Structure formats: C-alpha cells, structure tokens
Image (cartoon, rainbow, N blue to C red; front, side, top):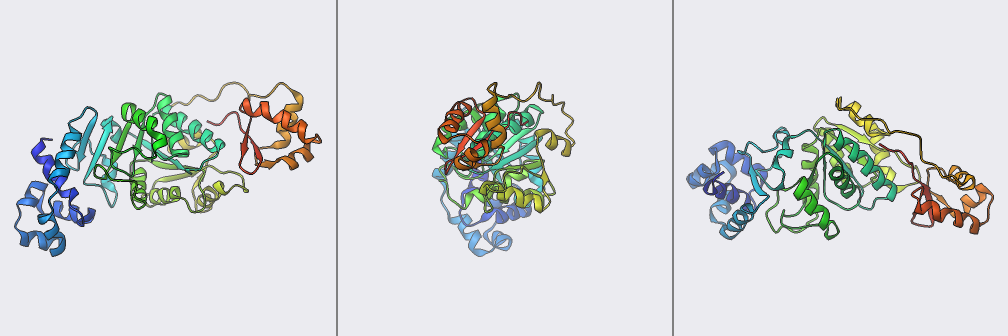
Length: 365
C-alpha cells in the first residue's frame, strides 16, 4: 500500500471518539478512506452523526500519522488494513474486526490455522509446564499458537511454540512499539523475529485495563479453538473462552485440583460445556486436525530410590502440605524434607505457596 493511501487509513483510526462501528459504517457508505475524507460534511454527519463527523474533520493527527509511517518503514514492521490481502480472513467473520493492525514479524502467519492457548498470569509451575507441553505439540502439529503475551500461561505458550517447529502470534493490549509486561522483553523480541506480534492500538498506547478484553476478542477470532490452562473463577481467560464459544469455536479446558483456585475457572468452563482435555492429542482429535503426532516414547520417568518413589506415590498430584505428607508416609519431617529437595531439583516435585508440595507428571503432551 502506498503511503498516500495509508495516511487516510491511519487518519480514520487515529481520530478519537469515532469507534470501530463508526469507522466500518463510513467504509460501508463511502468505500475507501480517501473517499470518506473527500465527502461533504453533511454526508459524513448522515452516516455517523454530527458529533463524530465533526471530530473526524477537525482532529489534527498529523504527528501521529508521520510517526506511524516512520514505524512502518522499519524492517519487520507493517500496517495491515482491511483492504490488504494479508488481513486475517478469520476476523472478517467477527462482529468487530479492526480497521487496521500494526504488525511486527511474519505477516503470513495471520492467515494460517491457529489455536488460542490462554490462562492465568499467576500460573503455577505445573500450569506453565502444561502450557509448554500442549503448545509445543500443537505447534509442531502445524497449528499456530495464539496468545496475549502476558506473564504465566501466555508466555509459556509463546515460548514453547517458538522452541518447536511451529509458530506463534502474540496479540498485545498496548501499542506495537511498547513491550508489556517488561519481564517479557526478550520473549516479545523473539516473537517479532520468528513469529508475529500484532496490535490494533495506536503506537505509544500504554497498558490500559480496558484494552485487554478488546485484545481477547482478537485472540479468539484468529483461532479455530481456545484452550484454557489454569484460570481463576474471575479470569480474563474466561472472556476469551466465552468469545470463542460465541463464534462457534471449540473451547477446551484442562482440569486441575479441586483445591486449587487456579482450577476454578477451567472447571466452570467444563460445567458449561467446554471439552475436558488431558493431552494435546485430545485437542487435535476434536479439531479433526490430521497432523501426525508421535506418541510419547518410553515409560514415565521415575526416581531410582524406592523411598523417594514411595514418597511420590503418597504425595499424589494434588497439592499437599508437609504435615499431611509426613503423616501419610510415616517418616519424620526432617526425613521428608531431605527427600523432597532432590526430587524438586530433579523436576519431580514443585513447591507451592503456603508450604505445600505437588507432584509433576513426567509426560503431558
């Protein structure tokens, strides 16, 4: 797209107070943005009302337009509009497709088959491990993993997709020139280099709370299904799952301990009809995705020490406090702690907040 045409697209989106519905109504009425701005004021007022039309004509966003054009001229950056052939076709079937995106990375991924993997920002180690295992297998099977670049499950999903043979899309709730959260700086750069990072928000947009639910509709809209791994009862991930369900997409949820607050959201989804899944293969089968996924080889990894193995069997996969575990196995507290430390270092056990411990399954995908 030539710079002159892109200027009009940018102007249409950078005027505050018009909104997505108003912009789409203008495009429906007048065609391309250059025709919108060439239309008489009376016609604009008839299309979107006097207040919005007056704002559209009076607002000066020249500096923001120049900034965006400069950003788009840099290597790896693009601005994709509704008129662009690379615009995600899946979003055209949603009720609120953005007029344009700011894109960093591999634009071609926007039209490849994808699955959303979302969950808690405050994920447990087990939850992150699950997200990595599922996302790696799904990505290796040929599905692009879509998530929101948050800490916890989102970050684990992106990292795993990049570590395999697959790809990932990060939909962010800030401007594409900002990195949020700061702890994901290296991950964001890796996604921009080997996957794709997109935002519908103007450059410089800070992490405003209202932007993240809007971002969630795009995560759902880009995907063929939505997998939720760890979510509290009031979680933004449930918004993504609801939006996916409203689009007629499959929603999947990973069950967890009945004692964990991070399982409440997933259990709620399952009660509402989401598919309970225990492996990535379950997801692929429900989606009728015909990629060949090799089953995990060998048997579960187990410690050689019979006492350590007995401790793991008594610990189980639900969170357990030290006193309960000591009582179950019939050893002293010092003996149990001496066994737990090497098991934790070897990846068999994780320590949870509140002095609790949980066994880590050795085969997940």
